[in-house]
Length: 587
Ligand code: TSB
Ligand code: ZN
Figure 1 (tube, rainbow, N blue to C red):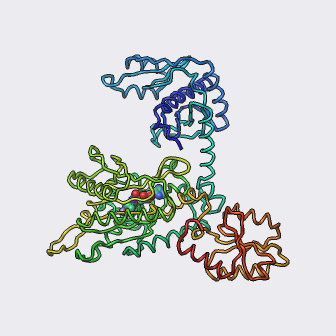
Figure 2: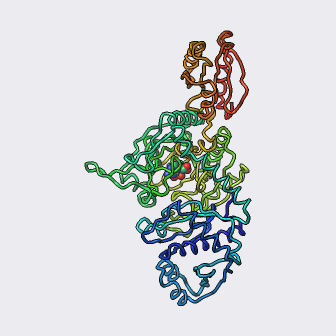
Figure 3: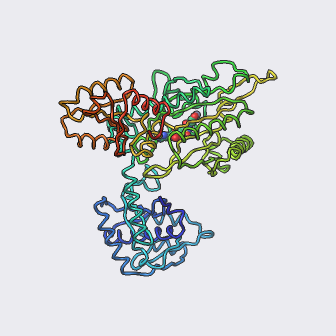
């Protein structure tokens, strides 16, 4: 899908369209006061204070109509540069613009405004020459947004839209948006009963339903096996820790705004943990270690709690209670490169198994100016960042660098993917850490008998089971591969009177093999039951009639295909077993 922000021409068009939207809103709601209307990847939005009025999606056509009218009028868009004093006078009725203007430094900012007909807005520009060029737009949705993104401030109304140069581009884009909505994991999650939420449990706290739980269990088994083969040692630890634990780790100082508040039990002060690193550090520290023991790889499917803004929580993708596919790798400084390489290779291996092709490697670095977020040790940061870069170059993988995105304890490699709806998110991560081992006073004895501090790599291949499941739902559009699907085989007798008994026999045999099977012996027409097998996206449907019954065979049809294949029961069982064992993406 197109990124409006990355296209200069479309950016200008969309920004101009945001002004057109504001003008139309001002005509319809004269009390409207405007904050900002930036261009975003998905088009543009404008944040507006409408006093007591509320705009809903039903109002959008009315606003669009007014925008069309203004566009047809065809006024020129005129730029004017003004002094700060003039700006303060011009916008004196709008406290939001006054806030913006008062923070402007006249010496290095040219204050400009743009006028089209009866509407003037403070803006840096540039804009198109005339509103006539703003014809092919669509208002997409409306939501609430805190002024300046701060929950203490008033909620403004945010109207989203998008604009193109011609109708065809707009239509194509709207079609893509419709398709994306159909893939949205929240929609499929509901239809296929994968997960739910309930206000009594809380926002961002999804409940995994039996179907979703099957998928999650398969993911757990899959990654557990991979990790065990690579020498990971899995543990279980509690999902709380004392405040002192997180003071020791530094989370209390650097990560507090992402944590649930403290709770007191007897004399102990607890927090729900946002990360598992401190627990794993203590497990490492439980024993003396020699350089010969390293790397030590402590893995856990660990539940964490994080404060995410209520507007940001989204299905399984962004939750407040999550389960990380976490591990902390304790290595000697000499082993960093080799171990990091193994993690990157594991990520690539897993993505291949899941058919994930569209992703971006992001090397997240610190912002050296930000002394508050990042601990202050230039040498440590420079070395760590150089090491990661070196390995990535050696592996010849494509990556881009992002300043200011590092964790407080070190630089990291993040893998970014694009969900069906909304901005990119991080799936896998691998983070280098020279800090926490020191804070926990960890050590090992090197080959000269000297005490040294290990380095830690934090890594999560799936990220969290929550986010990965959300992603897989969207990747597969809910048609999960055989090994993952909550129902693998649907057994349908053609005629209940003649074939139900044989169908039951087949069903039981398949169940005994450990497959997840359904018997559809409802008194419904064959065509109806076959169609439902398709809408439920079951990978294999067995159709059992006279032929199959007489020859003790089965006829199967793959999801999305029309032809059926007849094989013996044993052949069918082998086919299914092989696909499951190989974790085939397509059977
Ligand atoms: C990898 N301490 C490390 C760990 O050892 C850590 O916690 N890293 S993290 O903060 O980046 O989180 C790991 C992964 O969790 C992220 O890569 C992301 O995929 C996933 N994640 C983070 N926040 C959320 C959330 N709110 N909902 C769902 N998944 C999330
Ligand atoms: Zn960690």
